[in-house]
Length: 170
Image (cartoon, rainbow, N blue to C red):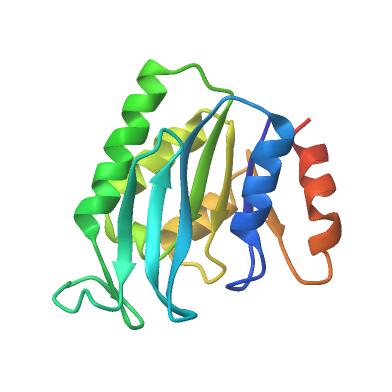
């Protein structure tokens, strides 16, 4: 299987699509997903959760002291590194067919440990993940790799995206 990375604008449904594919395929997975945290119906931050159950804050508007910021959110860099350690441990201890990386984005990429982890995962050629649309040197290199297919999710193709990606995974 080639590595498959989904890109698209915020809130187009990338994480929802990843979760549906994981449920549909019933494959043994390791990795993590990133989810919004809402407070009074407004986005207040993000959590990052491994498939083995470790759930930590990724970023929060309340984290004003963080040196690592994306827009109004302060990133909990230590928590990114902790998730990487957990998923690495899961990869050593568990049998898996698919590595989920949701997401290779600005917040996570502040961590050099995370970048090394992404490279290690992509070398295994069994990654399904999401990646930020606007590139930097690191994400551009990933997207242009011969063993990686990048699928751009839009509102127009969202209805057929799951089928398209499942075909790519065969």
